[in-house]
Image (spheres, rainbow, N blue to C red):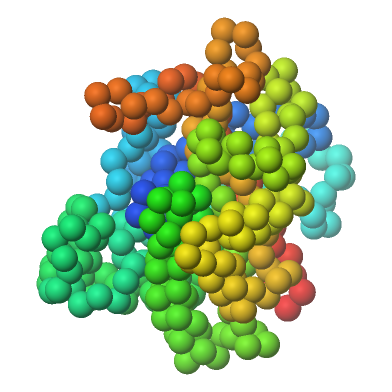
Length: 347
């Protein structure tokens, strides 16, 4: 896919990875809101996110409406959906950066294209034979890979090929699910092993490790249990904006991830951490603490520690109380873009 003539472009193949119900579809749906909500700081680049095709554009607009206007979550991805988005911002670096424009000339744009597959979380799961799953298995939800569809093996291979050839990966670590099910490793290692084998066969390993940049996102920071754990860990700082929204700075995000791994049940999360350390170059891994919906801000206009939950259960269905204020949703993609672009210049 190419950008319009005259616009610098970079194709960033980014894979999205996470267990069922880790919030992958909501994370993607919040991208547009995150871009629109960027603070307008003089001299700071801002980004526009648009669909690379009609389907991707419809995904953004429809799910933005679900989140922001109807206050409901998007339906979980039932199978596999290919998506492509253009991220458009001011040109950075290069010989023209910072130079005044000639009269009649137009400012250059930096355009990078993200192509990914949004897939149901069960695709990353257990290697249990497809025809022998117990009826109570979490893999029963929805249609797709584990329902015995004729094309399911082809989809699984397509997903592995896609992840193997990606420049970057966004891995969503769901501390709420891990606390409940302790199965993060199950939905990580099987796929990781298969991706590594493909990279080895394609001679893509670098120093015995995967060539990918990896953005590890600890999700659901807005959940009371997750926020309070981060607060107890001492990694939460108050934001500078009028709402005083708490955040975990990127330089402290790994500290929080480590604490979650150390305190996790049955060692599943510790094994995930061990695999990240073993399979990826440490200088190609970055950590973020994220929330797709953000914290509830009431009539006071600022964050209040006794009333910040933005998700409530109504009639057994999860609903969003107020405005969407994504935290570290756009940032992992921008870090991956900058990292892959910097690595390409060094080749």
